Image (cartoon, rainbow, N blue to C red; front, side, top):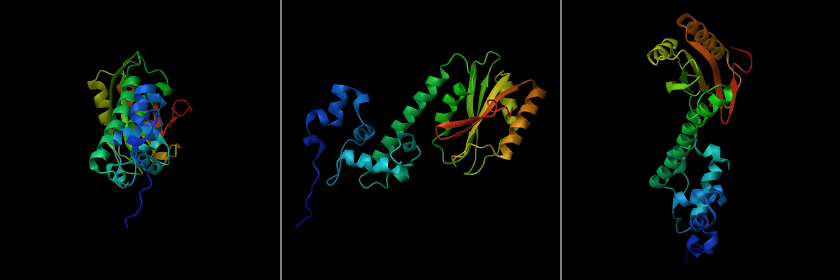
Length: 232
């Protein structure tokens, strides 16, 4: 005899408990993380519902939604019932959410504080499993001109060319800039190399009349500001 199936398909749930119908009736904000994820998954397997698959995925992210974006396609596919198409759909949805958050932050008229800058760089850097270094170029009124990731490294470090940063600042007619990089380890404490790089950027900028306003270190949803801590 075959193994008895104990789960009930979502289509047999009460209508106001089905994720899609619940979203239509009560709005997206009424759904749990697993219910929203189940909508992306679309359907379950013979053994497990889409909700159960969603919970399996969330367990990989330690049940923290901000950790979900760190999961790779390969890691998502480790969940039985999640193939490449579903994994790609989830990754695409998470990327759209991240881009919306970055775009909202970039609409600010001015970047005046470490908090303003953090709202731009945290979505860019928090989900990376390797170090990356980004620069935000602003004019004399602290209005955004351009932002870019200029260097990608390994788990423990990245190489930054100070000359490229200053050259790009001059090309963009920016006379001020912020820099930021992430610590995949989760440790916000600046290393000696971080401190030395900050000093080099500051001194080189002074020579070129391009001012370094701050250096942020990102770890997850938290950040360290050289300026706020009096290290700049």
